[in-house]
Image 1: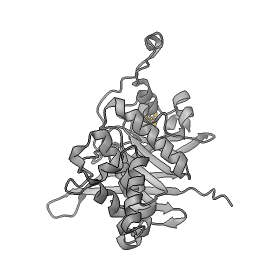
Image 2: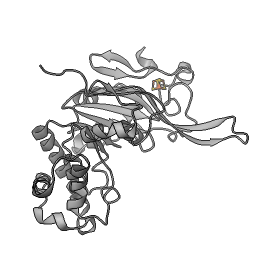
Image 3: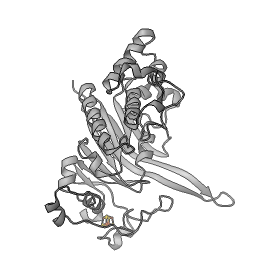
Image 4: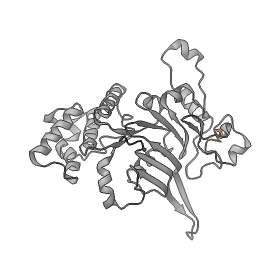
Length: 326
Ligand code: SF4
């Protein structure tokens, strides 16, 4: 029987970091990196998560794989609540839930060979040993477009794109179901970005993977995502199908993000109106009351400065958090 339940559900998830306290420690200040996020990711889909740097998207990704302990809310993975389970209990989920990082060099141990890097997870989870393990490592290298002779080399001997392929092979080694891809192409040359995205898509087709694909710009998630969530100052502003988001963006922030993507056709570029956002992104240590976007929104009303809008389904499968749609 097909399992129609979401593979991952985040329910009112919060992750705050304490950043200081008053002299007597009575009042504390917090950075509200992720603030009341509720989303679902279905099996086999790619959910793109987009927002400017500092909006909390990477913290959200790291909280899902429990590199950070959430402050409140729930993470339900395949029907099980993993929000507060111990790191020991989390071990069995680490096999199912993997992460690919933005900076492939920083995330690879430079003193380990590629074979040791990829083999680490295989050993931790007792998947293969001896010659079988080595064959698995060779297979994985070939799967990500590298060669078996690369197994004995060190990370510094590779280009940025090749290092990201090693990072991908490492996460695939434990045969995961869901991979949190945290800006996996942002640090790569534009010419390499499409190759890595195509490879991730092929791997998804062949292995039935589910992705949370984090990026800072909507143009990067357009082709790979089935659905997209737009995040601003710790909150989700809009969620819908990828095509719907590009065709019919409803939230003023999404409209501004989309308008900043250059259009290749110069004829259309003349009629394409760019929405210039006023003001800077406020600090998540002291975010605005009401709607987080109210300091930059051209449609701001009094209510926006007082009441936080909730994410609501305004059209089938299209969710928006904005007082304009209430
Ligand atoms: Fe703009 Fe108000 Fe909507 Fe926020 S709630 S996006 S400030 S109109």
